[in-house]
Amino acid sequence: MDFLFSLMLFLHFVGLAVIIGTWISTMKRPTVSVGQFWAAIIMLLTGLAMVALREMQDGFEVNHMKIGIKLVILLVVAVTAFIGMRKTKRGEPVSTGLAHSVGGLALINAAIAVFW
Image 1 (cartoon, rainbow, N blue to C red):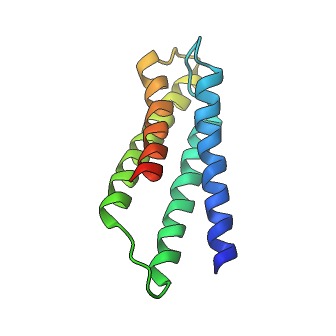
Image 2 (tube, rainbow, N blue to C red; image 1 turned 135 degrees about the vertical axis):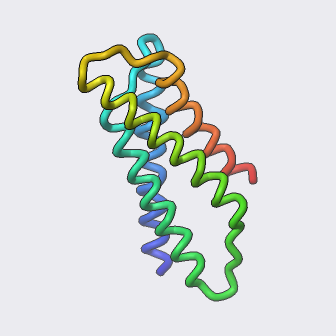
């Protein structure tokens, strides 16, 4: 069970790294890539799996308020990444605010995980 949780956490971190890394690398010309959308989906699935694994563990109390806030932020990241990805695929320009919201909200989500 510990290995499975560690694997989910590792994949969660990889998704976070893809979102924030792509955001930083395209800072001069903000855009949203397909990888950012799929990384958000990976983060969503691995995050839910980690919560489920912790809920099944005896004696471990999950902070549902924290998880709920992180879930809402991640859903916003996934939706904005999806919108940006669709615009990129169509050749339409992606607004600066949309591109920065994907990376910025992912960074805020990581800060909530660390500091709360």
